[in-house]
Image (cartoon, rainbow, N blue to C red; front, side, top):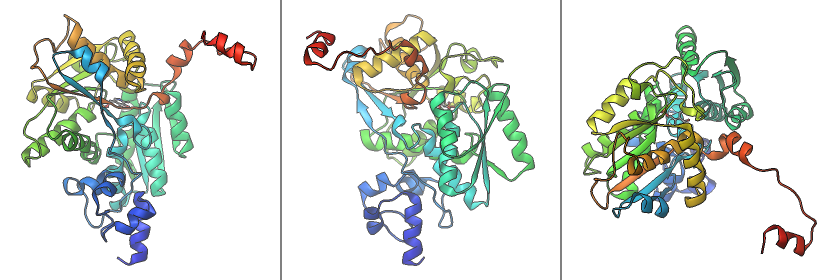
Length: 392
Ligand SMILES: Cc1ncc(COP(=O)(O)O)c(C=O)c1O
């Protein structure tokens, strides 16, 4: 590769001019901090289905903060430490970007000229952004009227072709599967194994930061791709001795959209957490295997608990997440404080490390909070009036 095309390639990966100057000829930056900010393919290339001929499409995803949460730890007690992996700070505001960089890079390598996905919102935002970066068309099929405003706005801003169907996410995915059989579209839902491969890098990052796998890992479940990916990542890192143990996985579904918990398809899933409003998860079997092999559990969370946890997390730890993500935090409370829980924390070993993935940023889905906000009343622009207003 010439120096010019090497630079062009590195520009495409999202590397800064400074990173370009330290990159190697395969397009991978060569120093540790550069690798982190250049995206998950640059950082974990050896663990991914990437070859010299794969054109890398990246927006610098991954390397998300792993945040120790003192208030949440106090709530668990027993000298346990609770950490949050904040996936809401990925380029399009959700964990989907980790899988999308791999799926879109592989789609380009295989000659795809268009992407297609069904979505509860975040996949469409992510696919649209990476398609724009790659310079190809993105078609998103969405359940009409069921997508959070911020996510729909993202897909529109990135220039996706948006089609709303009068049905559920499960209907949208069925249509996507059929269309892609007869056309040259690459599906970038989590049924695409390249998505799962990219998403497993979150488990790698957790182990690389903590020095080992956590004892427990809690996360929300919708189509069940993410739990499948985490389990693959943890197992792979254990197999090459980068970690010495595997976590217990505990998944949470919304009570009105809990097919795995109830072990039956839910025809009309309902929950305020639109990202996990799914009645027939594509990776159901893999999720079941991950939970069984990790000796974990699946549980349900009510909408009121989700909203309460969203507010609590923002106000006590300074982390604002969308409702689906807050199901994880509500899950921590349930494991600690409820008698009716699928996994009780009362008897877990002291000093356990508990990892919670929060999957998407709170600004994507603000409607519930906007409704609760009182109208902001203005006061005259004097110190006295302002002091009175803040009751000093
Ligand atoms: C914010 C958020 N959390 C959780 C999930 C569920 O992930 P999965 O479908 O991989 O189970 C999704 C899926 O769209 C999501 O967007």
